[in-house]
Amino acid sequence: MKNLKRIAIPVSLGIIGLVLLNSCSVGIPKGATAVKNFDADRYLGKWYEIARFDYRFEKDMDNVTATYSKNPDGSIKVDNRGYNYVKKEWKESIGEARFVNDQTEARLKVSFFKPIWAGYNVIEIDDDYQYALVVGNNLKYIWILSRTTTIPEHIRQKFLEKAKSIGYNTDELIWVKHNQ
Image (cartoon, rainbow, N blue to C red; front, side, top):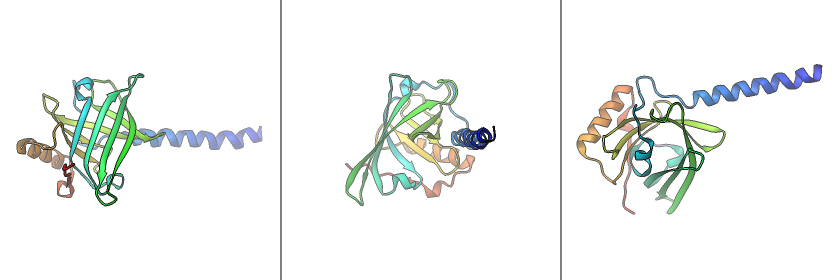
């Protein structure tokens, strides 16, 4: 019985810790709301990264794209690609995204290194699914995406205003070059 307790208590605490860590990592920043009536099929396809914060995993990257497609199990394949202009090489990272709630709410969790998941929340998208504002779990993660390598100024300003209203410091955005 003592041996069982020695094993069961640490294992239980570990499981509880993983559950808490997993649930915390797929949040949405306070003041942000995921798009409702989201059409996942229309979101699939190739997106160009227009702007982001300077993340360790995208350091020195230009020409960044994300391509989304459906996996046979209904999850979404995430294929991120970019050119490291310092190392002069293309990098690719394949991940998986799953809806947190219903597929009509643009709240997803994404993983490139299971079992670690992070929030991926589309908080603004135009009616034609050409431009999207995406945030992560907190104010450290934000992306402006477009179906083309540019974005109209009025959309850019709308997204920047929305991000600022939530608390993002948009002066820290990196504007991604698309030249290859």
